[in-house]
Image (tube, rainbow over all chains, first blue to last red; front, side):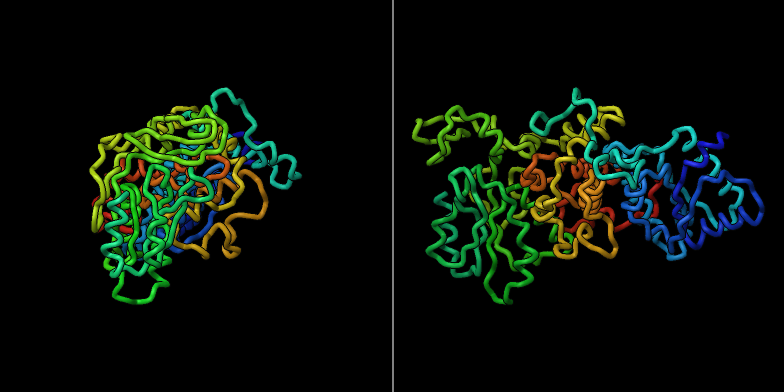
Length: 169
Length: 316
């Protein structure tokens, strides 16, 4: 693994309190080795996942977004992940349309006892993100968040050759 | 036109309010009209310039209207009735309180396309319509422009020109331009490589003023003064004018309309800087059709797909 690259890359993980957070804990207690890219945000249930969390994280330059919850039919709140999977699949299919890489977003189901599986999920997704490298985000100031305003005003000045104008559609 | 006026004249006693269109600040602009007095009925017009989707006013008006026996009459084109159906689906509008006047629609005019199609420069003093021709009168003379050449983008992909639900339909049915949902414009963007797609949206959204006209014109944006885009807690967008904040606002709008948008195209029509914002929602509609075989605003009894679930679903 490239040390320098690792320092920059970040994956945001949204884990459900009842299954995947426990699963990640199990993996830790069992001392399974995991790549250090993941930063975990605990949510009460995957039903709490607003698709905007995913879009905003990726637009702001998070290198990956991982969502994990209870297996369908095992939700602590009975139906939360049934709602969630519809939303997550929808946003997964929508991301490429606005130019965000759908490979940077992954959702899966890991239960509290599946420490081994958690290790596998994190390793596989981290490998994908390492392969993809840093996420440029949306808007040119994605990398330099604290840079002066002048940077952001260049947003989107790319090649104009293949521009689709609304009138030509 | 006679029939709309005569129909309203006949039923005016039963009506509290009539929502229709009237001629605006110039003959080429039709604006919404709210008629409460019989003598004002004469102001109402119906022609291909009547672009605004009047269902946007219904949730507010029905909420504030007094509970009377009288109904609220509203003029709706084919696509507008889909918006109304979607509002009924989600319980924002009480169908019983409405008198829906359905109008089969030949398509609406895109003012910018019309300006380009005109040869004369003088201001238009009078407009008339005849068999899919726009006849524009100005002091430089009269010119005829075929309606098909100046249609709005939403009308070129129209598949619902005839009202879906109405108390009365005035006019003869119009053949649809597309039989099946057409996503050619979405596919044109999808055909670009990922990097160029991002560059394309960065370029387009850079023009956005965040005037929120697209949100205000949207019949299904029902949060009104509690919009997430303007909320400070939680604070989703900042006050900066960066492309990313503009992008986030459009993502809020698009994701809140996922599985609900009926593709009436109002957001794009009202955009003062001509961003094709309706494409986001068309993409959502395409995904909803692929995943759940669902079209918004077609069946008043259906539940939007993101407000329900199916335990037996596989593959997601």
